[in-house]
Image (cartoon, rainbow, N blue to C red; front, side, top):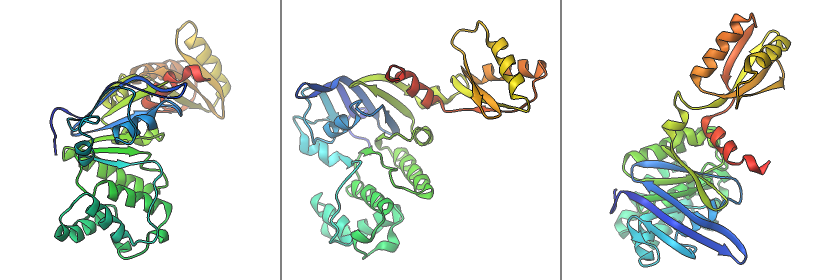
Length: 315
């Protein structure tokens, strides 16, 4: 599935303004083949504008954008042939059946006529909608329409996938199936860019995360670097004596720059950010001080911590 070059998506110095409002101010991003890249940022950070530009639906004011090696300005048709696009919200043709809907897009992408029925059935099976064959689109639930949208994005076997909130409206089982599908597509060589606010799920899906804020790239990390033993996150402590826990924490943390304890939690407190080694050392100190600790666990994820640090100025 690999295309020309190392990256399925390459964007350098991309800018875009809407009147006096600058949505993108020189954003850089790459999406390698064989990986899932997460796009994370607060509302208004420019994620949707970027995805629309990558999908060739919006022209950048400046900057270089390549999809599967094709410059979107010079070769937009070739770029579109290489990508599958699933927006956050999309229209469906309610008067069609689910198989007619997919066959319509198979025709639009120029799939050979004799291949379309087999491809449609394979896609419906892939997104677990095979039992809806022949049923009208308007009879589908929101989550089922979301899965149909994923099938539509995959009709022409794209080398690049752009997904905006693909898990929206999905039940827990469907989200697990989506995760497995994306990992499988990446293993087959696809370059996948996923924008989502569900950070915990992105940690399970993504190989890399690109943080964006105020229309610019705020960070680019391998997920393994964020979630490994050296990752710094907040930790939640529970104790049979919350009062003793609070006073002991205040004493232990006194003078340690960057560590903050929150003590107004039922039955315990939060502290951090700490690595796993730091959390173990803190637990040892509390036990040595005869604090009856009953639980110690991460209060959030490393990705959440990175996101919160990036958006600290928005408080």
